[in-house]
Each structure stands twice: as structure tokens, then as C-alpha cells.
Image (spheres, rainbow, N blue to C red):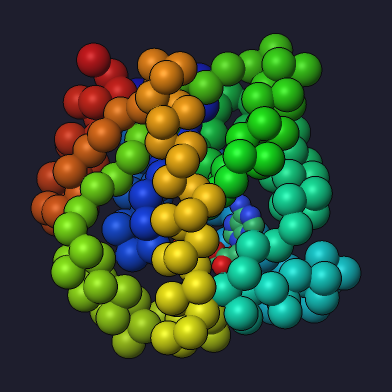
Length: 191
Ligand code: ADP
């Protein structure tokens, strides 16, 4: 199935946004745009952007909105993003969602759906533990994870209501295995 689908995927750390995004990107033939991955790549390659953001990421704090939004819009302007995309990790607060709305308007684009992945906190905690063992991310240490979860609760969660009011929110139970959840997401956005 070909894309032309502009999607946001939301949910707390560890709920499986990355794995689901990979599947959806393949199915709809659209790029998976993960802000965290782009930042980590820039840090690994020691680019100017990488140097600017690494201290925030190590602590689990948000990179300043200006820097993040500019990076996202640059990525969304690339040729491979002209037929849709799945945004993972952005927007993460009210300012970023306003920035995105303005950018969409200016570029005559619109969102098709905002997918919210939901799972109970025990499952989320165990998925984070598994990721710590398997991926060895330098920001997956207890203090930084706690900070990210707190920021999610305080700044990102309010966006759920914002997108629900716009009629874009699709809540999906993320407690099954990856293919089961992928199926549920497709059902939620294609209906
Ligand atoms: P997680 O979902 O576990 O928090 P991510 O890979 O999405 O991991 O993000 C890693 C880090 O990258 C965040 O802790 C933050 O420092 C930075 N980051 C990612 N997305 C954003 C964003 N939209 N705004 C600000 N900082 C961000």
C-alpha cells in the first residue's frame, strides 16, 4: 500500500513506538522520522548539531524547541518525505505542536492521524529493561529514564487532548506482539 500518509506516533518511553514505526514505514512506503535517532546519529558523527544536543540527551532533558523544530522541518522537506512520513518523538510539548501546525499550514500539508500507543506501566517498565539490555543506549540509565518519563507525563501527555479535539487521535492497545499491534494500528487509521 502506497503512502501519502502523514502520521504522528505517540506514547510513553518503552511502549514500542520505534518498532511499530519501522513496520508502518515499510507497509506505507514512507520514511520513519525519529528525532531521537537523528540526534544520536549526529552525536555519533560529531556534527555541530550533535555537539549542541548531546548534554541534553545524556540527562534525558528535551533539546531546545527551536533546535528540534528546525531539524524536523529540514527533514520533512527532503525529497523522500514528499509522499508521507511517520514522525516518532515529535512533537513532545505544546510549543512543538504549534510549530508543526504552522509548518504544515505554510507547506499546504495536513496530518492524517495521530496514533497513541497504550500499555500498562508494568509492561512499559519491562520493555524499557529489555531495551537497556539489548541496545546499550547511553541515555538509558535510571536518572535519565526517570526524567524522560516525567517530561512525558508533564509536557507530552497534554497533546493527547489537543489531537483528540482535532479528531485525529487513534488510540491503540500496544500490549500484544509487534505484528498484532501493527494490525491494530492499520485498522485504526484505515477505517
Ligand atoms: P525516548 O522515547 O526513550 O525518550 P528518543 O529516542 O525519542 O527516546 O529521544 C531521546 C532523546 O532525544 C530525548 O531524551 C531528548 O533529549 C531528545 N529528543 C528527542 N525528541 C525530542 C523532541 N521532540 N524535543 C526535544 N528533545 C527531543
